[in-house]
Structures are given as structure tokens and as C-alpha cells.
Image (cartoon, rainbow, N blue to C red):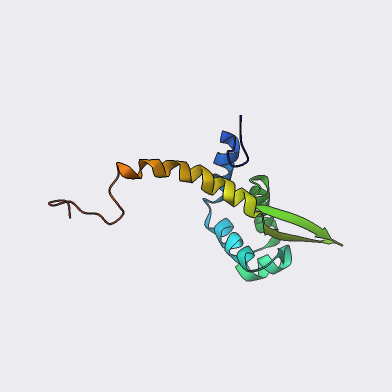
Length: 111
């Protein structure tokens, strides 16, 4: 049974799959600043609409972005709650931090 922050396995994997492509990461970085339409995203990324539409579909299917229709335009924005859910999933692994050395930690002879 899932709580507000727990996701089914397919939603977790689709979220991380969506984050695995550099173009999609760039789209998300642009959307951190403001809501944008496809044309604005195409211009900012110097890519064509058909290529970008594929990436936006992946992001939308993973529920990382929201799409809002206004006339003939579709505006995209971040779905912050889905990022919170994925972050919550990852935070469950912090409990292992006690058995792992801190990042940058070097033991004698392992430099």
C-alpha cells in the first residue's frame, strides 16, 4: 500500500528513466525558471519540435511536468510533487549512510 510519498515501482523507474537523458534534464532546468511553450523550449534548446515532443511525452508520462493548454499552445511547467516523491524514495537509502564512508573519505593506502 502506497502512502503520499511512496511510489509504485513502475512510477519510480519511469521517473528515473526520464531523468536519464541530457535533453530532458535541460528541459527541466529551463522549466525551473519559468513555464514555457514548446516553441520556447525548441528555441532555447536549438532543437526541432518533433524531437522535443518525444522528450516532453517521456517527462509527462513520468509526471515530472504538467501541460496546460491555452488556445493552440501547450505550456509546460514542473510538477514539483513528483520530484518530492522521487526525493523521498531516494531518502530511504540514507539509512545506509552509517555503513558507508562519507563522500571524499579516503582510507590509508586507498588514495
